[in-house]
Length: 471
Figure 1 (tube, rainbow, N blue to C red):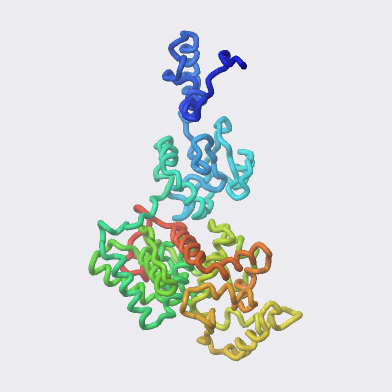
Figure 2: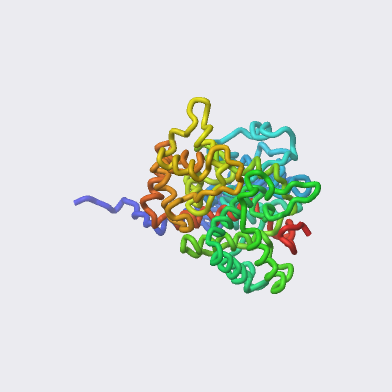
């Protein structure tokens, strides 16, 4: 018979878990053995003193940088290479300022957010011309950081000299419950009233929200009218004359100013209206976080440089969405909004009559569909009001027929048909086309995320009295 008398008792899972703090932090006086041996006790005290001293030296003269945990890990912190200190005065609303220096002695990993690779601190500093440069922050990066509010709060407390919080306040579902209880109901009433008269406005309001979010963030800058000395976003070629639904926002704002004067922002009204339009055409309801403030800047030039045109290919679309914090899959999901609404002929006639120097008609376009489009948009027509439905079969129903049309080579825009130009992207289109139950949920998540892009909160921006005019 074997003799087991000299074997150590097996360590239970509970015992291993409870002993983790002591193995990781042996200086803890409450750990077993701390008091049983004076030598161990004194050694642990010395270890505690040394670690506290190193910690204090690290943060005694803090440099303004942003600490952020990857995957909410308590073990390792990462300094995101393109997410810096929010500027107090020198940068625009969405600008973040490069720190003046990075302490090389800090026990931190500096990670490139896109590649996930460790980078050298000196290389990071050399990415910008000089300290204080303004860099752009994507919404996805902010969202990632906001997933760990406790650790972010720690990062802020270590830098009490910062004039503004390191993070903009998070949007909240039910933000107006104690400010204007009927805010969302009033917006919904105005939207439904308009959609009962013209169901096509649902696509207009969804597109209005998208075009607002991708230029300066979801700050209602797209609603501002042009003036004698400034051409606003709404009058830029990507928006004029195609954007519509402004009067619905105006009606909701007028009612809200009567019910709750100066409480509800135009940016939130637009987000609510887009959500209600999705409900009307897609049939799903979801909560919209609110608390946005309205921006004070609207320039046509920024719409031209930030909105993806209908001529973009897959690589260009992926790049511009990635720069705003969206994956290729989310880009394809958001493109599904093209299943409702209409387009002016000028957005795609190059595919019919002047594709390139070799062929006049885009070979990726179904010939039968091309002939149908030519009848609706004659070559050389000067009628700028000619429009065609994005989805000829169900133009007012938010379904997955858009993806089926693309698979049949009947995508209206180049930016639609290009979504199947690689095997990986084509698989995503096929899933959306033939697993229709998943699409509404994925679209909801991506659309809510889009509504958080570059938002102004707290005391930033303003709450306009008239959505078309800066206060």
